[in-house]
Amino acid sequence: MIPLELKNKYYQALLNKDTEYEGLFYVGVKTTGVFCRPTCTARKPKIENCEFFETAEQALLASFRPCKRCRPLSHPAEISELVSTLVDAIEANPEKRWKDADFRALSIDASTVRRQFKKRFGMTFVAYARARRMGLAMGQIRAGNAVIDAQLAVGYDSSSGFRDAFSKIMGTAPTRATEDTILKAAWLDTRLGPMIAIANESGLLLLEFVDRRGLEREVERLRNKTKSGIIPGRTKPIDLIEKELEQYFQCGQKKFNTPIVMLGSDFQKSVWHELIKIPPGETRSYADIAKAIKQPSACRAVARANGANQLAVIIPCHRVINSDGELGGYGGGLTRKAWLINHGKIG
Image (cartoon, rainbow, N blue to C red; front, side, top):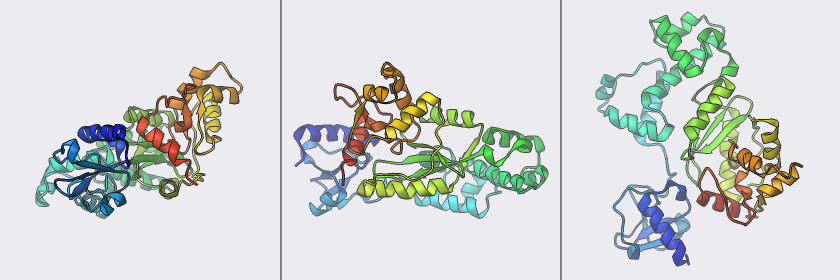
């Protein structure tokens, strides 16, 4: 039985279509017999017509059927058929430079494409296709091919146009490009909502919920700090963290083995290493962390380092709370923070 106070909170989240509550509850609508996720765009029922559940299974057992609009049995941001078709089209012909006429030939509205790609990947279709072409060019350059050959292979007649596009995406000129100047970014669906993972071939550099406040600035700082281009793609660390996150959200896996890269000052790294030592299901205060790193007066600096963590869940900054027992802050939202702390108690 869900307490009345929590029901009121869930109902407000339903009205606001709050992504922070994805995976935390489902609502059954008594007047229609369907159940939805918190972010469903359907017309909102009155609270007296709502029944709240912690899992989709509970809603099904209560005889509610899944909503066809928000598809509560799928991932919150499961890739649409349109996006899937166009991603396949890019992979089949990555050198292609798409224009509105190409969409009309497929009976697809260009504005719909832009909107759906922006929602899924955080970039438009054109930006996605361009990044994919530049990634292909980078592969050719790394393989020892001449820059002019890479330029022509990805459909650029103008050397200056290719150089400008390459530099904008990769952060460096084609002649200076190396394997170290590329990071891959992938969208990972989780129970608590989609996350973005950014990695090179050796380690994971960033893992965040996509609705985290200031994420775009965070990604840009990462690009500048590493002097790298960030393009859609996958690496072994991304494949590994995807599997480990699935295990974590299903059964509370205690340890992550995905190799990570900490980008920060020595002080920040000392804080992050201490966070990793906090046992699942337990919490520490900022003062506790400051004492543990033998800088007891550095509570505020610890809080800033905690907030600067770019590897959510893996480096469990969600396990740090205020000295008075209050949750404090969390970039992914306090609702997720509370859930993650409780989830750590599994097993």
